Image (cartoon, rainbow, N blue to C red; front, side, top):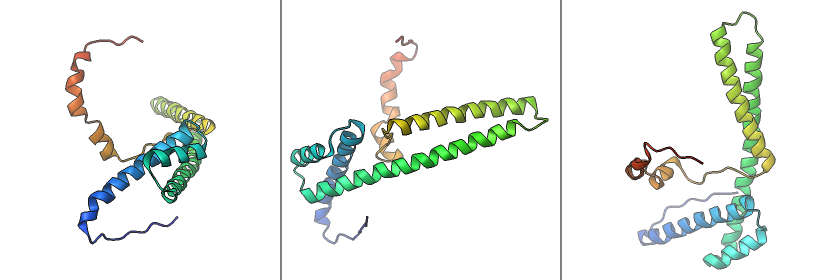
Length: 165
């Protein structure tokens, strides 16, 4: 995949290009969810989104390739994360087998080992399910969408209540 960048000379195109970029990202997220989360047939999802958003075949094909690349990257990264976590578990288990460990230190290491094993179980479960847990966007975007300082005052009435499931 090649990425080409250029400088736009005509500033009047900027609003149009920003709208196109936003549409591209929206279709990308929608297509990713349709195929990899909801398990819909890829061709049906492509055709539906192309018709729904009025996108040309060239652009929907580009978005399709991008979603496939994101999924492949997630799978590769997940294997790396699992191996890394397994290495942490193995290292701590080896430390715990050493003689003459302070009891407080051994206790800390056992707690850490328990956390690492829990994380490893979650990563392996994610790998077995094949359903990616991916966040599209940045931390700044998340905070703009979910401004807790703005939302928190509306939730103050729940402060002293207990929620029973």
